[in-house]
Length: 292
Length: 275
Image (cartoon, rainbow over all chains, first blue to last red; front, top):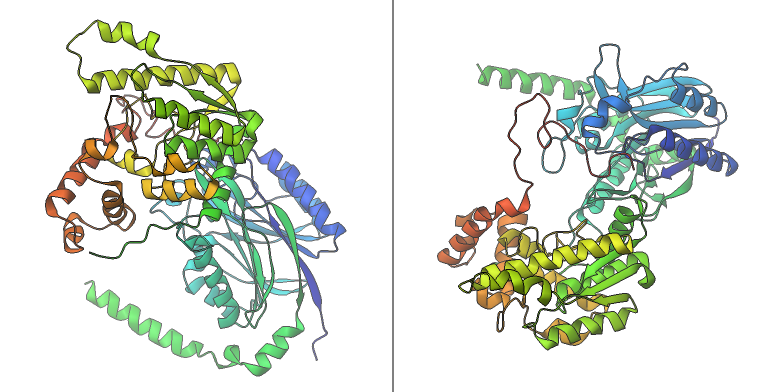
């Protein structure tokens, strides 16, 4: 019998100062305090929350190293002694490559860093021009169970969430800076509808918790629509932030819901990973032969 | 003809556009906006949105009649000012414009119209400094795509809240925010010469061209796809050519590249950099 556990997750739906890390850090620390006061165990910030999104040539000048001696991470790590936190930033690695990154900090330690795997470079997006592509993915253990983190375009591809699920993630933390677009007669922007459907679908497909933090505000003419949300393993919406407004939204995750949902719906138990691997090998082999 | 619905959710558009105006003005440390109000629906909508973003006390509506301007234009601009309770000023451009026009008795209507549009730009940017507010643009997506605008004239602004709305959508939103009825129902005109109307000058209606532009631009139809969707081939050709020929009005002037880092090519920052 697994001991019952409830965790309180705070979604920090913020606007950011474009390229001004120190002002963004102050905002983070402020919201972290607020979340702590409200009894949150974990606070989730959006993609590139410490830097702003359309960085272009600012990318290299706002890059950080998630280590205690870094002045920004030093303070965040200190804050993580009281509450687990996930922040978005630009990581500069030892080979001087720049990644769009997310860091999970807990009890003064960096538990995990995720590098964005899919960099949209089409339409209004130009990430591949300025950033290096992440090249690995894994779930990681936390005091609340095993977690997987993904950044925006990562979860527009089905494989990263799927891999995290197979790697043991029962809680998915998604972070976005999703530009609002697609105005029609509908009361919601198309971009909001797309993302909400995706996020909810993963909760259903993987019978898992999915929390999504999206930012708000404007960068030049781009708006960011917010609407951060948490879904439970039945795909039920637990909490949602307002559209276009800054704020902290709390949701209680009853981890025993995993037990109840998966007793009813054993999708994870029945997942045929060996079949996936066999067929994927065959498909890739055929593709490589066709390319010869 | 394919069914094309350009209807927008006006509550959502209002919220985003007012937020945009507030953000772009306040992040440079200002609180105020300047809008040239012509009496037409585009500038009326921009003025209403600016008031929604900043409050009437922070918006200056500027009327800039020329001696041949239609009296209706001035009256309709006043309807906007009265409806919103904004600050306002009337600065006629006749005395600025006429000496230049008088130098060439042969001057075409287009040249005179361009001079008027650019004189109004000078007035607005002067009021921008005097009032400590940014000039809010009034160009819609239809005229931007067709290039139906005077470069450095009516196209000049610090920010443009309505540039991604087609003319028919501007009308819909204008009605929703409460722009007075006479402005919504009259024929669109730049009022640069007597009897000028947009649709007369362009040679097609906004209702027609907005649908075509929506397919070409938003839905990425090829010109051939548009013909197959029911648009006349010569109309499609004319609009496509107009868009291409006027692209220079939509971009900054190209800078000749010499060094390793050149503004516009590999010196890339948003305007909102640092804020």
